Image (cartoon, rainbow, N blue to C red):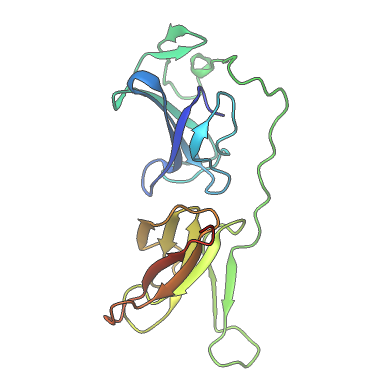
Length: 210
């Protein structure tokens, strides 16, 4: 939940915070919410206590948890503020000194995250009714699938669109090779093509709201 009102932006760091939400507040303050699930994250104007994401284990996480930071003018703060009181957390593993309760999120019952559907693809090369490639990619749910030849090797591979972020894979290994943002998500429709005849497919969008 958002610690305070502000403007939320989505961010991704493959080897660090994973799927993140960064909320910009007044006077140079930001709060960072890291290692989230990819689905259910919120961008744009948010209010205090609003659900902006769901606890996950993305990025460099050993298990599901929320990594939360306060930043001032881009600098992470070692002294944090909860309920208007300055605190200096202890970062000792499994220490009760890490536990603080804030009263700025009035929801009294747990919020159930969305149920994710299968992310396994079964791909067939010759219309014989059986798959030639079985691969897992993305996390299912609301992610939109895109297909294209992202590296110009003559073989189409998979990609997924999560809001306005695209994760494109070249070799069916389950990990993205290209991370890019394009469009603004929402109702925009994605089109894929080789727009300049260089052998590499890239992205386009159709804005159906206009």
